[in-house]
Length: 94
Image 1: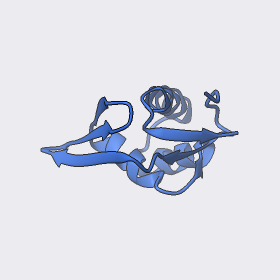
Image 2 (image 1 turned 180 degrees about the vertical axis):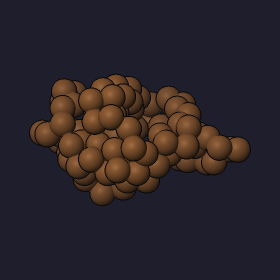
Image 3 (image 1 turned 120 degrees about the horizontal axis):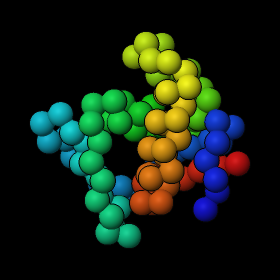
Image 4 (image 1 turned 90 degrees about the horizontal axis):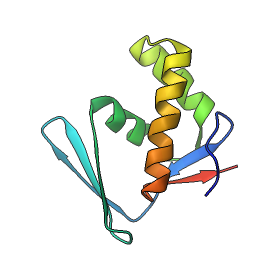
């Protein structure tokens, strides 16, 4: 697995089933059998990575949208994306 940094491009895996329940997005990797749940902001990130997106660009978009400190945003987004990559939910390039 590629280490995820701000320069990495990430994209959603194509074989993930999703469903919205209340304010959460619930996902399942059919191949690996992993379940994952995202809150409203995590769901927004999921929508933003429908196409390959550099992590730095994703963080810049989120800083503007949620008025969060860049360092905090980067740390939290990188942690989430690493978890998602380990669960087979995203593909990381570069």
